Length: 88
Image 1: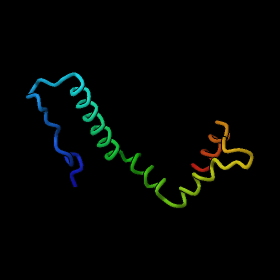
Image 2: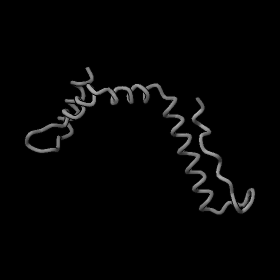
Image 3: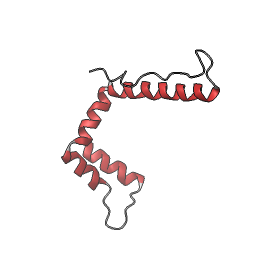
Image 4: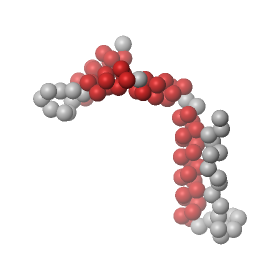
């Protein structure tokens, strides 16, 4: 499966080599986004993380990590502690 070339390249209506600064910025942003997406797709750690959060049991665990009957906000130390407990 080839995901990298699913969209056709952007054509410049002004002619080759004469991109406006805004068009060039947009083109660079699109190229960077494509590069980042391909990097994420090929990253094993990212793939494993997606599998873990896609697992219904893991999703339930993530939802209950921040559960606090007093408020919906957890302090950083509490969140870090719960994360460490669930990572073991």
